[in-house]
Amino acid sequence: MADATWPEELYALLRKADITQFCYVPDAGHQVLIDRSLADPEVHSVALTTEEEGVALIAGAHLGGKQGVLLMQSSGVGNCVNFFSLIKNGNFPFLTLVSMRGDFGEGNPWQIPMGQATQPVMEDIGITCLRAESPDDLIPTVQAGLTMAFQSEMAIAILLTQKLIGAKAFG
Image (cartoon, rainbow, N blue to C red; front, side, top):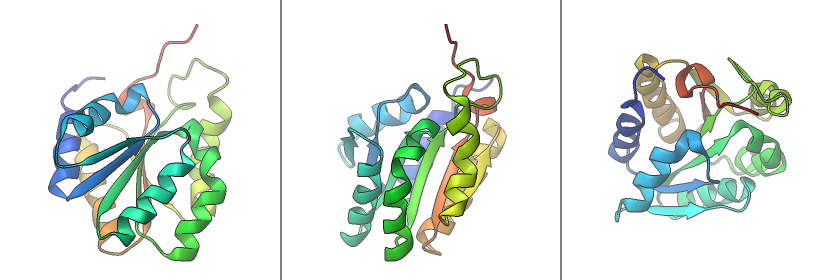
């Protein structure tokens, strides 16, 4: 990871966009966002037992007039497939930041199948995926995703690739 400031810039962008609900399953790829949301008295940060709970929380945030983001790892996408129908049928705006596994430089063979299936699975249920490959394209990509999600009321996943977050050591 060449530029370690991007998580701080990302958190500032999310807050500037009035994201006040953060839900997450603990993940090293989202650690700065999680820590910042927990320390921020102006946001509601919720640790989840499983990722699909976050889909319902984001829908509930919208119904309550708030904007939220679901932070999850690509391995958690498979847990959410049934709940993604809530977004599609309820036509809720939805934003998730997905820390990718199973792509560039992955050393854990157990992460590869879901990592490779993440984008096709999400697109098959109607979620538009935008990929952030480097610190330089992260902020413009997330800004585009915020606009698409909360102005056009679309379901958007920002895939934070391993080129951006780095591959975890295995083994």
